Amino acid sequence: MLSKSNLKKITTLKTKKIRTQRQLFLIEGLRNCYEALQSDFVVETLLVQANKSSKEITELVEFASAQNTEIINISDAEKKVLAETVHSQGIFCVVQQKPFSIDSINKKESEFIVIIDSGQDPGNLGTIIRTCDWFGVDVVILGKGNVELYNPKVVRSTMGSIFHLPVVENVDLEHFLPDIKQMEFRIFAADVAGQTPYFEVNYSKPLALILGNENKGIDKKFIPFVDEMIYIPSFGKAESLNLASAGAVLISEVALRKLCTGDFEKTKY
Image (cartoon, rainbow, N blue to C red; front, side, top):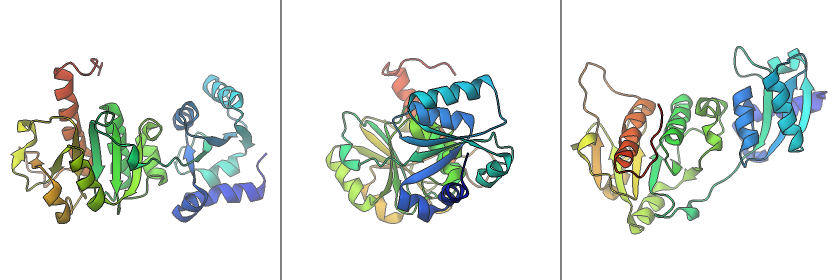
C-alpha cells in the first residue's frame, strides 16, 4: 500500500519546481502508462487502484513486473488525490525525465525538425508533439519561453507520443538557428504575414519548420535566420488558427511531399 509520506511525495510532482528538482514526472491512464513502460524511459513506480480489474490492467501489471518496476496498490481516496482527470482510470506511473541533447542533431538523421517558439498553451503543445509523431518528424525543439514539456496537460495531450520521439527543451534559438544553418538546414517559419503560401514551397531536406506563439507568431529576432516565411491562406471568416491546427496543416504537407517521392512507406489513415 501507499504510505502517507509517499503519497505526499508523489503528489508534489504536480508542481513544476518539484518535477525539475527531482527530474521525475507523473503520468495518468492505461494508455500513457503502457507507452511509458514500452519506451526507453525509466518507469520507477506503477500505481494501480486496488479494486480495478480488467484484462488490460492485469497485462499492464504483469508487463511492469517483468521490468522490475515497483507496483503499488492505491485506494479510491488516494486515486482522487493523484488524479488530474475527472474520470480517472486509477492508473499512474512515476517516470524519470529523459533529457535529449541538441548536440546529437545532424542533417543525416534529423532531416525534418519542428521548432516551437514560445508556445504557451499546454494542450496545443501536446497536440503538436502528437502530430509530429504521426507524421514522422525526427526531432522537436522547444525554445525558451515554452510551456514546460512535463506539464501534466502537455503529457496527457501527447497521448503517449512524448515517449516516441526526441523533444529537446529550453533551447536558446539565437544560437541553435545559426548552428543548423551551418549544417545546411533550410529554415521555414509560419507567420500570418508570410510571403509564400505553404503549398507553393519546395521543402527540400534537411529542413526546420518554426511555429510561433499562438498570439504573436515567431519572435522577430529569429527572422534573419529564416529562408522563407510561409502562411496558410484563409478562405473563411476565422481570425486565425491556433498553434496545433496550423502545425498540423504544415507538418502534414511536408510529410506528404516526402510520401509522394517514395521516401515513406504508405500509411493507412
